[in-house]
Amino acid sequence: MSEPLRTKRQSRLRAAGLHLSLTAMLALVCAALVFLLWYPSPLQSIAGGLELFGLVVGIDLLLGPLLTLLVFDMSKPKRMLVLDLSVIVTLQLAALAYGLLTVCEARPVALAFEGERFRLVTAVAVYEQELPLAPLGLRKLSLTGPRLVRAEITSDQDQKFDAVMMALNGFVLGTRPRYWREWDDRASRSVQHHLRSFDPNKDAACLKAPDFTAALAATGLTLSQLGYLPLLARSEGWIVLLDRARGMPVGYTRFTCQF
Image 1 (cartoon, rainbow, N blue to C red):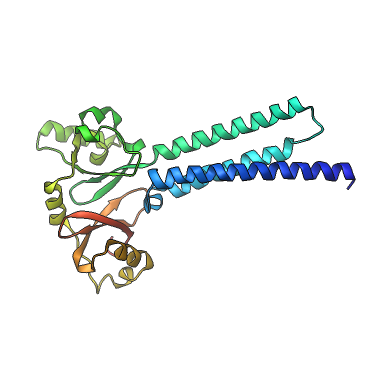
Image 2 (tube, helix red, strand yellow; image 1 turned 30 degrees about the vertical axis):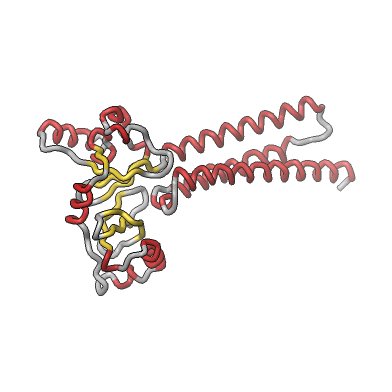
């Protein structure tokens, strides 16, 4: 390889490497936003945020540096080189912004108790036209993890018919803000009434699984002090761990023994 070609190749590699480093720093900032605010642990696994973010950042990490590697040439006029790099950065930032918007729309905004189960409700699943009908404190979708709500429908026949028809269109009870209620003693009592129990004999394999033992330790409670209810979310096989004494959620874990 001639010296000019070797020098040209090295300059392209340095430019692409610098671009990759800057992109990685930006990705770390975005990761902090996504996983500390929108998808607090372990919701990134339950709601699929980890996969979405990985796809967005993976494409973005490759897109910019690869294009820089292809077009960077110090022999170009400075104005043209600056224009090329500006177009690449603009495309990369646009792709990142679109990806982050997608991740934001898929973020969990409510943990809705629906009577015998919980539903992890994402922003895109909410029937937003009904937000003005929600209790005052629940009219804005959370940006810092899901809010605990009770989804309740009255005995009114018109409301029941409406709930059925909307469910057929994809808007089930937990996604309807008009039926959200602030968490209260009534919700806790209802949870206590519907709690499922762990069976140390029948569920022995699941109770010894690393995910479950870690989640149990994080609650600070014993197995006898806990119950659970199924969790409907993007990922299957998850449950909500609940404090029997208070009827309050205290954690999440994978658990497939009784499904």
